[in-house]
Amino acid sequence: MSVLPPRSIAVVLGTRPELIKLTELIRLLGPAAHVVHTGQHYDDDLSGRFIAEMGLPEPTYLTGVGGEPRAVQLARSLEQLDSLFTDVPPSAVVVQGDTNAALAGALAANAHGIPLVHVEAGLRSHDRAMPEEHNRVLIDRLADVLCAATPENRANLLTEGVPLSRVELTGNTVVEAVHRQLPEPAERFAHLDRLGLVEDGYVLATVHRPENTDDPAALHAILTELAALARTLPVVLPLHPRTRARIEHAGMAGLLAPLTITRPLGHRDFLALARHAALLVSDSGGVQEEVTVLGRPLVVVRNSTERPEAMAEFATLVSPGPQLGEAVRHRLRQGPAERARLESLPSPFGDGLASARIAALLTHMVAERAAEPAHAEAA
Image 1 (cartoon, rainbow, N blue to C red):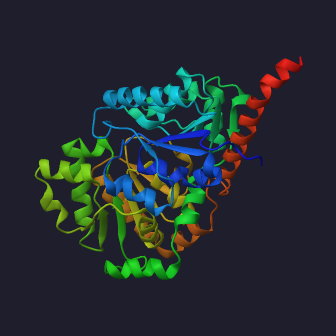
Image 2: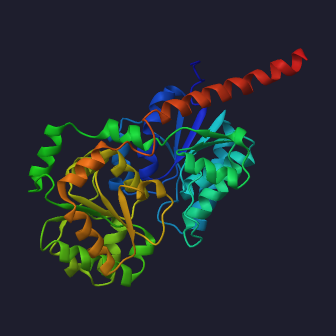
Image 3: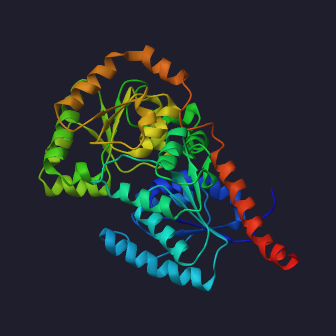
């Protein structure tokens, strides 16, 4: 693989999941990676300390983005990215997923005629109520190279008329992220001991999506079911800052009393708990992918999902309410035999080489573009 020029690949991100999923690609790109952080996740628990934990280079930070409404995030990010790409145009721009940061990076690349690579292209929930659905569709229309994680994602793109020549089946970078970040057993069990937990003897939950946190009825239903479950076994809930604020504003803090509440966890600590949980309950898209690598069962609390691959074996999709408790109890009753079966299954999200494939694509693409003027002159 030829060496790319320093800081020639702009990797635009802004949230914790993007940091997790792009870390290995950034490592492989080495000095060629110029990480641009929009600040969409500005809380140190959600983003800042992740950069140090994962050994990433210090990013170029945008300002005035975090905590703002979607339109303001996009406008402020675009203005600053436009200036950045005007001063020092990169050879390519990489964005991941469906965040406001990813859409801003895609729009800025398009405005400057810079090749755009979309990591995790082709996901579709077909739920227009999700802002992320609009983001991912728009990014896919703008991208020059669409890195589809699964054959289903590729099929979605081809059905929408994206030329096959622009689509690459790479796998999902979450697989290598989990393999690299999962602590060794001694460290995992030490983390369990600190929280007074035993292997396969607790449930790990996360709640952060607006459809659950911004709807008081949905939030109340989820917390009620988790609190009822905690009467029979511990329920660990790392509390997202926005979720905590919504709970306090709605006067629901009493529902947290039966739960084991922690601050947002670093990725290694979260994976340590997830690896030995009897079950996970979450509304996170990333957790839907991670459980397929860890071999753990999951109940997804959402109205829809863009990751049907996880639903086939590893996860159950439910809406907030009594059906959440019913689904959790059903999966818990399946016991150790089911967890052992899940551990034996390969992840539908790939073989852990996605980042290497994407780095090779970038190197080839930049080399081809660099050779174009020479070809034109020779002709």
